[in-house]
Amino acid sequence: MTAYRRPKQKGASYFFTVNCAKRRGNSLLVDNIDTLRQIFRRVKQTHPFGIDAIVILPEHLHCIWTLPQGDADFAVRWTLIKAGFSRQIPPGERCSKSRLKRGERGIWQRRYWEHLIRDERDYRKHVDYIHWNPVKHGWVTRARDWPHSSFHAYVRRGTITVDWADEPNETWVVGE
Image 1 (cartoon, rainbow, N blue to C red):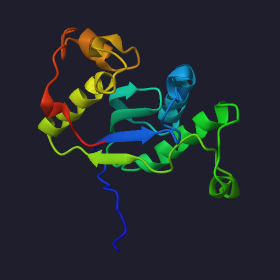
Image 2: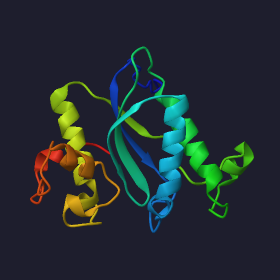
Image 3: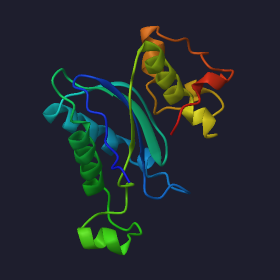
């Protein structure tokens, strides 16, 4: 069996999906949205990166980051974000023996999904997917109604209109 190797392209843009360990009935991320935002800001100060698009859902998030030229280390950034957030959350989550043995919390899934953005079309498809995701999961009926999304910044910049995606588009379905 061949080991999985993450793509490492310096200065590139990447799409990520990061999940909480407990998915069902969990609202940890939106319940602690200010803490999560603070951790993102702190990590960006010490390990700069651009957040091109993002959506925070109750128990997972999607985002596109662009890393600085000469830098491909998204793994250290995710480690710092996940650990920093976990340290701010009071203990009490269910934790497996293997996590306890390693001194880990049971807040996040150990792994995350990453995708190296290939071109402008791929980038646009993933931005649309991010903004459509709260509707896909049934949290709202329109993208504009989800508060924890870069959708609103895109509207302010005039990149999309507020009524964008009031009707679904099957091309927004990308892997999670």
